[in-house]
Image 1 (cartoon, helix red, strand yellow):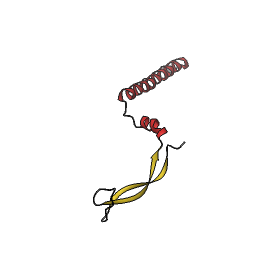
Image 2 (tube, helix red, strand yellow; image 1 turned 90 degrees about the vertical axis):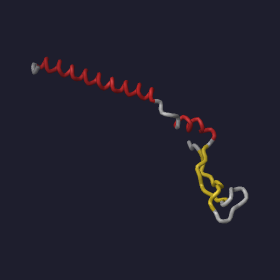
Image 3 (cartoon, one colour; image 1 turned 135 degrees about the vertical axis):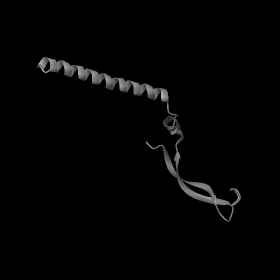
Image 4 (spheres, one colour; image 1 turned 180 degrees about the vertical axis):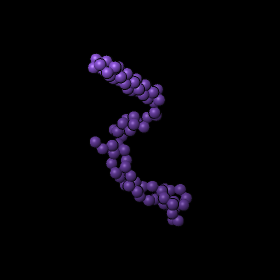
Length: 88
């Protein structure tokens, strides 16, 4: 799904021959630009929202706790298996 379209845009560019709608020393020029669709504004705004440090810290804490717990469970499982095998 496209968020916009490529269109030809009129802009003011520096020129020795000024034209009426532009400020002094500028003339009308054309460029191609990607113009966003109004219906996609909510998606664009959501993707450019400010970074939420509290939420990121919560996710990082959860991931770190999971990895640490997995390490301790694996370590204790290895200790128990080595004891059963008679190596410990």
